[in-house]
Length: 147
Image 1 (spheres, helix red, strand yellow):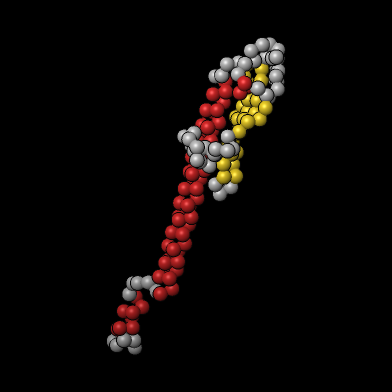
Image 2 (spheres, helix red, strand yellow):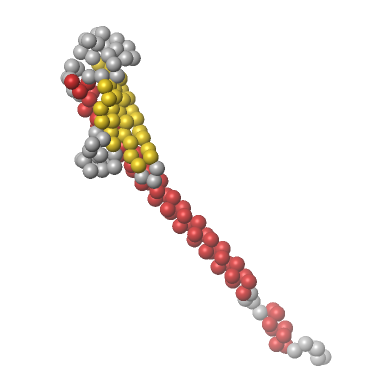
């Protein structure tokens, strides 16, 4: 019995392998996956940098607030008013020459209650966009009510 088809034609149809279209599709899929991973890495790096800056700003605000709270009750720096370090932007460690600007406000006497003042400290910085973090605490006056 002789078959009408030659044996080499049968071998070509049944042999395993990939077509050019399958190879291009697989390469495109791998390329898109790698591109998505690279974008995620960039986003994660940017978010980590932002978190580091936020933590530094919180530390600078807390440092100033604790400094003000530790002053004698009648200290001139606790007089009602607005103050800032804008002339000397700060680094994360508090040294001058950085990107953080710090400002604070001491409220009028007896605000929010007799014998108290409110001290609010804000730290602002700009990287890819502007950020601000603010904390506040009460400071006791030397007299009740404040004088």
